[in-house]
Image (cartoon, rainbow, N blue to C red):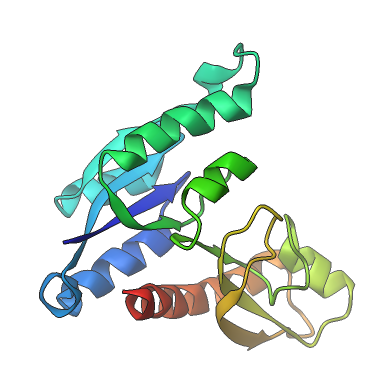
Amino acid sequence: MKNIVILISGSGSNMAAIVRTAEEQNWAQRYNARISTVISNKADAEGLTFAKQHGIATSVIDHKAFASAPQPREAFDAALMTEIDKHQPHLVVLAGFMRILTPGFVAHYEGRLVNIHPSLLPAFAGLNTHQRAIDAGCKFAGATVHRVTAELDHGPILAQAVVPVLPDDTADTLAARVLTQEHLIYPKAVAELL
């Protein structure tokens, strides 16, 4: 069985889209794959409830618990890797996981680590993508599924979706329109990797 581990930090809407697609398309039979666990760095992440309701194991590795470690990011990533590796992942899917991962973590899952980013990469890597696209006068925005590399939001592109930037758009209205496309392309890209 190909195990998929999904990492979240909040509502987990992309995780939920992947779970629903996996159920609807019967990934267990079709690809011999399953979502084996959902891990969050925040105990109050809403997505954990959704995962539990769908019979998926969950766990929390709180990044704040490593704040006093000599190298907090490395210590957190090491604990996260230990938890992920229990599931022998075929894929590790970042779905709104709001942590910048260390090069060692990325190298450990090389070729198996994917992310979705709310811009048409390589444009607008990092945060505040929607406002930055509006401020730049972009006519189009979108989302990108990509393999994760040590360079933030610069891995090989697997899928993209484009939406228009409307004259009266705010960062929130544009984000909502992009998110609907994320929910379509991320499950499809994960299925193609299976």
